[in-house]
Length: 398
Image 1 (cartoon, one colour):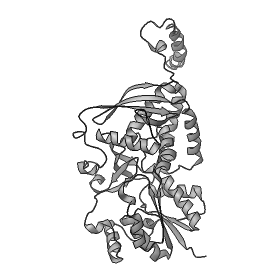
Image 2 (image 1 turned 135 degrees about the vertical axis):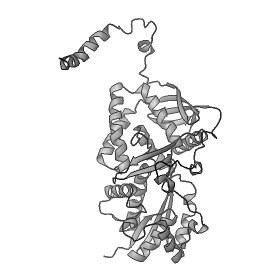
Image 3 (image 1 turned 45 degrees about the vertical axis):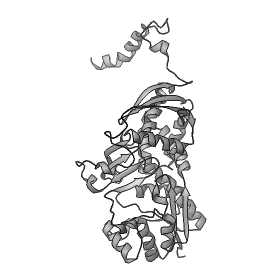
Image 4 (image 1 turned 120 degrees about the vertical axis):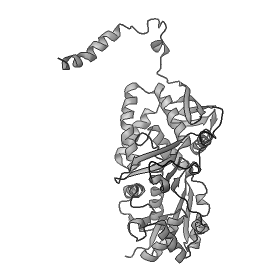
């Protein structure tokens, strides 16, 4: 039977507007659009109007900010996930949620296909499709960038003009970067960034002030954790999306959260990208600080071993895999007593830990003091510990 519907992940920009028309032409499908508001800013405002102008009858626009932060960002931060030691996975973590809703809407609309606008060179195509197949093995995916003859944005513009597709590009403003944004981060690729030696233009950064223009005085903030999640800023309790928004504002004013990295894409290409993850940078450092006094040493080290694997799973698109879910269960269990308060100082791009406390702290001043410990620890015990642990080293050197 001929397929009749496709659900398109739609932003209202040039690429997805062209894709919507192209799907109607080349697949003779009824296009249903889905736009997720995950905190990217202005992008969702005109999506409904633009879709209607294309002749699309069914338009879904959903505010998923709370769902995104609570059920995707927070679990990832419990893991201290960071890809290749630098990338906070801001784009990667958004894809599973978008795919999940695409599949759910497709089921509701009895659509045979879903469609995304990711290119054939990047990671997003993998992330979108692995998530979709994990949730519905029978779903069919259309990936136009792997099918059509267009090779550049100029080709898309010609097609848009030919079919009278109204896009912001018509105003003569061409963004020099390929960008992605959500409440956690903004990413920049392409343009002059394709030369890893060239520095980014200051005008590129949208969410953080330069160090020169950031606040001249430090700011001290107290962050309250409960089971690994920040629940309050300066004793003000807020929902997760509001917490992250507030952290973004604080960090941005102090020039915190910029990264310029060359990463290894899953598809085998090295890619240079610039990222702003202002609130996430504060969160990451503060979470490690509260863990330092609440986690047992071996549990902490086991968690560190798993963090690299977990980060690669998120980056490569395996959010709905059994291995990621299993690691998540262990990580969530490890956070049962990761509660307390961390005091941080924000200044000129730095997040400086100034204090941490917890009712579940394993830190013992009696044991660690350089003063008289009143017999809490017998230093002579260290001699036997060293002898036992040096035995294999002595044997090896014979």
